Length: 204
Image (cartoon, rainbow, N blue to C red; front, side, top):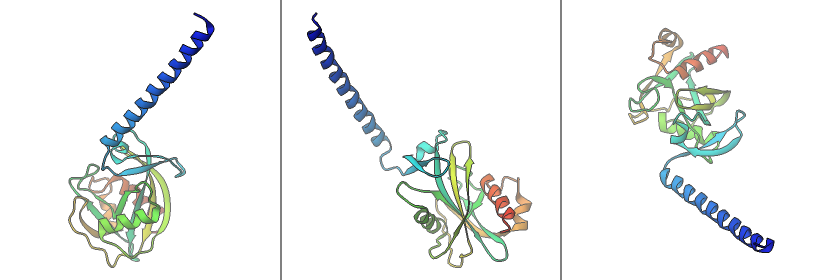
């Protein structure tokens, strides 16, 4: 076979293989889109919070430990009481335990303020409030790794909780009441971590 003929055949073969690879990529992408259709997507971030991609919520909860951002907000009183919510027993993570008043994922395309307002309203019916960021830290559980943006607010007069698939109830606890329950499995490990964090910062 002449060099010219081989060049013609090999060149054509390259384009055929490239076309097959391209079509296969489209096929895989379509299957992913169909599999995760209608599911919430969340941003993926690095340790500094820079967005590196996005993934469906189920993917970041499957043990892959893909780092994704969440917002938490501790609701405090000047008397140093803490509002806790009791997680629904239908929740995948820590069902039926007392937890931080507000907490949830940041959706793809949302900023911190938008996510915090959304979660505050959905979980404790809080609309008008001001909050300040007090800490950013990583939290790892058996199924996920989160970059947590922790806020604190003292605006709580208008909060109200209706039993939902997210929250069963909410009430204020004193610091002493919380300390008596540390390690008892009544509180989530993540809240216990944040409680100690707030104490170190002199907020409790």
